[in-house]
Structure formats: C-alpha cells, structure tokens
Image 1 (tube, one colour):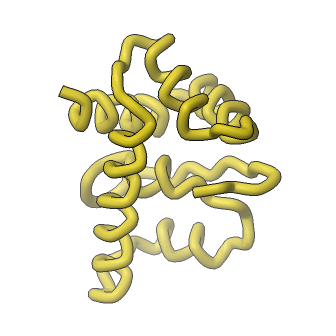
Image 2 (cartoon, helix red, strand yellow; image 1 turned 90 degrees about the vertical axis):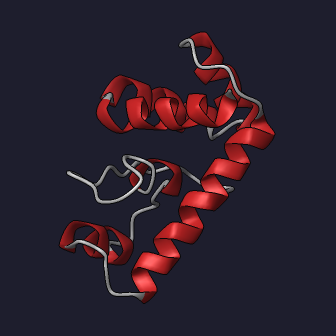
Length: 112
C-alpha cells in the first residue's frame, strides 16, 4: 500500500510549489523523516518513515545508475553541479525516469 503512496506523494511534491515549501520546513525538523510522513498524511498520503526511506534509497540508487550510464538530462546534470542543496527525494522522484523540470529547494542542512 505505502510504496504507491510514497510515489504519489513525491510526484505531487514535484509539481506543487506550496507543498515543496512545506516539505522544506518538514526537513528542518529533528526527526525529518517522521515530519515528512506526517506532512504526507495531512495531505492524504499514508506511509511510514521507513517506507519513505526505502523509496528514497531506491530512487537514489536509480539516479546513481543513470548517472554512471550517462543517462542524466542536461537539467539534472546542471542541478547536481549547481551548488544548491538538492533534495534528492524531489528531483529524482518527480518521475521514475526522466524529469520535465528539476526542482531544487535550499535547506540549511539536508539529512538525507
């Protein structure tokens, strides 16, 4: 049930600037993963912090695989080199494959 909820939530984050701001605030919490799961639940997406972590790790591994295979888009490469804090959960998660746009949010100290 929850892997789908995580995927749907991350897709929604990628397209909703207000939700991106809410996510940035949640990431500032001491227990950021729980805060993100709570935010998602408040928006109708029910998953645990562990399920969120598992999906983020899966997407990070896919991103690394694509990076090593030279399959990143120009936007993705620019974001990686841009120097801003990138919330991987958002820019890798927008879709399971390629991205129409790269979303970046600056946070003080990303823990993921």
